[in-house]
Length: 115
Length: 109
Image 1 (tube, rainbow over the protein chains, first blue to last red):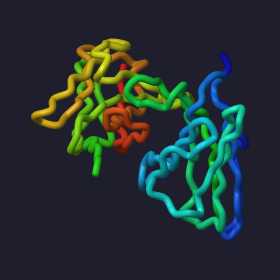
Image 2: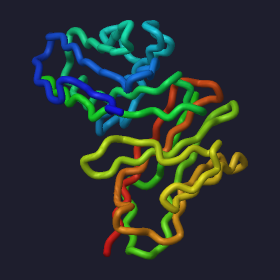
Image 3: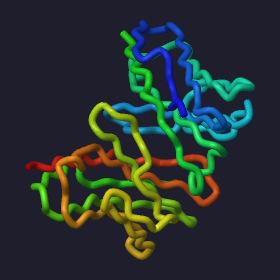
Image 4: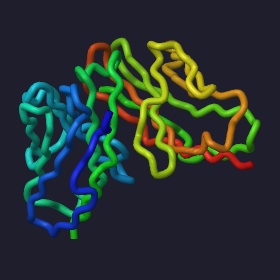
């Protein structure tokens, strides 16, 4: 079974630009979660999608958004980039998204650098 | 609010020594606790969850609700255990995890 894939792996943008990151979950997984990982804040939950609907959202500004397609692939978008958005963005998929029973499988991450 | 604290950024031990990675949490309801591990150049992966009560790679973790802790233990550390370990918490039936800052475990030969 192919693992979770994320594209691109590395990205350099400048302040004010916007960026779109992509995540392809494991086949059959309907839940996709996004996380931001920084040295200062650690690993933080951004949002979770299930069957094309945003089911849960973390405490991030509205500049962070996402969507999920009918094939469960997901994208996240960050508009008006700030220096503080530089981070590793991780995507994880699981069959149903329930933490207690499902196992989340993580992708390799997209390293975003904002200059 | 839910919070996970891993008090040690770095834990350094010698091969064969016992290991205990500490995790304390704050949560008002019934928590579900997890340990994740990230080996060098590998992806973050689930190591174990308290609900399963299983031992993975010789690691065990017991949920102590009185002390609000979920420490990860292994009686004899191996060099291949060197990795970054993250403790995480979610509410029962939840889809939202809260992660600790992680502890880097280094096992010396």
